[in-house]
Length: 67
Image (cartoon, rainbow, N blue to C red; front, side):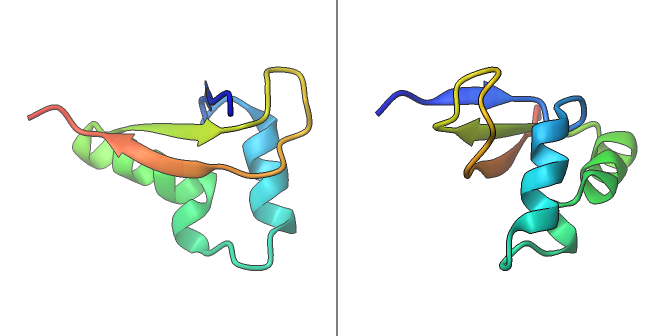
């Protein structure tokens, strides 16, 4: 399986996936990720099997932490 990354802060596919997924929570939302980035300097990133330009069908969000 090929894995890709996407920036959930800039890629609207992440917003659409979160809005449509029945198991998504507030901790998946762009607003929460922005709060983590602004407050702690964390860099959110999504690992997905959806290639750039394809509709996102799933993904896992992580935050890169430099310490």
